Length: 257
Image 1 (cartoon, rainbow, N blue to C red):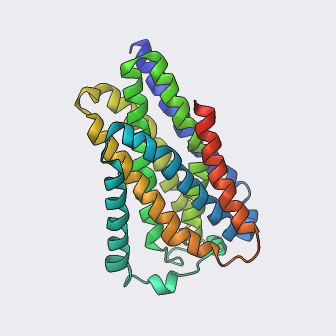
Image 2: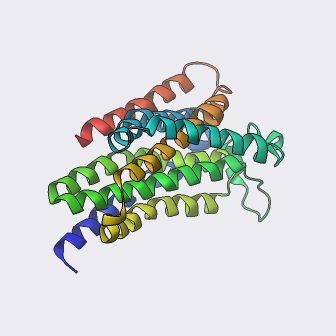
Image 3: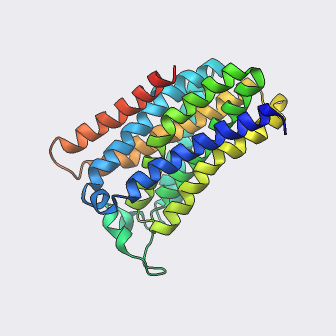
């Protein structure tokens, strides 16, 4: 295996490890996470909004001039999916679930909200695209690959926090939430290596469209489900947490450049 292959694998694996780090930050303080469920969900919403608007939108527009249209299309598709396909799947029963349900470990005792799976799909798609960006960057040049990897790594920790927090918040069993978040983390190195091998088949407009779709899913999840849930907490804590999540996403982008 050439040195460049090892560099791609290392960069992708380091990005995946950053997602694991974010997940373990939440799990290590699980009782604290349950206590401050609404604030943590607000923080997650801020991260998703910040990453979607501040990073994904500009990057996707550089690759595809129609990126805003794909973001809007993804937003509408997620709305249609939830409103017409999930509204009868126990949405009313699952409303206002908080992290306290994560204490339940018996088989079948949880009835997780489908929104958690939608978040997993959006996060997973974004992680795959992160891997594509790393692989493509190394194909262009070593320096471009390093910069691409730094950009990805910078926002993987808050995304790991957001992914595990969202799944626990929506009633997913702790073990299952860890498994799904792990899949999201592993998607980045997998896509980085695969893309480096097949990069000639990845067009920039297609990459931009996929990136925009991930951004649209982030914005929808934050605006439609997470922010309304955060209103359960009165006072400034949820608002400050939302702003903190956006700030973290912004700082991650600044540190990457």
